[in-house]
Length: 105
Image 1 (cartoon, rainbow, N blue to C red):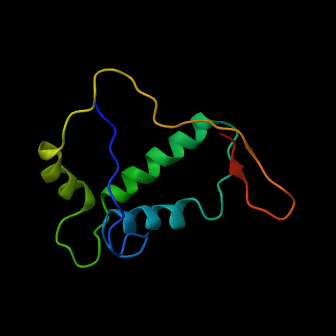
Image 2: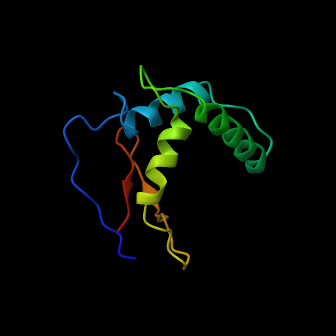
């Protein structure tokens, strides 16, 4: 699998009804205020419960639920890669008192 990025598209934000809009909806409705949990496992359980609840939700005036739309889309998705891969990168940063942090190269 080769990681690729695509250029930002017009209107790409957490507004609207597309994927970005639903990410924003999920964040605003489940992570504001930040949930208090005692472990990552507890947070993951909460997120799974919220996802199950959202599966029954309809977006706007759509006739199908989120789960029904996903069931139609699922066969068109590519399978996940067999081998594990890093999805992030850790880096050190520093900042002066009046500046934003900058990655150290």
